[in-house]
Amino acid sequence: MQSGRLEKLLEFLKNEPNDPFLKYALATEYVRLNDTVKALGYYEDLVSNHPDYVGTYYHLGKLYEALNRKPEAIVIYEKGMSTAQKQRDNHAFAELQAVYREAAGLDDDDF
Image (cartoon, rainbow, N blue to C red; front, side, top):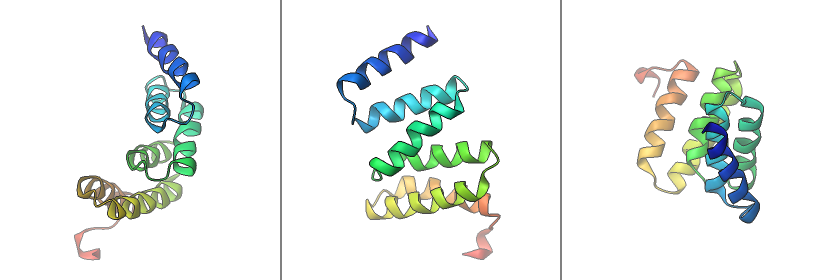
């Protein structure tokens, strides 16, 4: 069943190779399958080629943190907050700000 979902997503991506939602779904599926190398590839592709896809930043940052790459996570959270502000996506901004503060070791007094 797990590989069935992955197979379907990969097939969809063949037909729509520039669809950011499919790339995001694949990255998420690879995280679920513990294939961090492939997940990183899709998330990093999204940040490079679809920088306005704001959902990417939270999950890529969390993956960086899980891989003990906190400085990279902090940079990604910052980029995500900027993107969310430009899009006036207050919900995404708040989520990114919360994980950014935690990763950077900041508390409420630091803002």
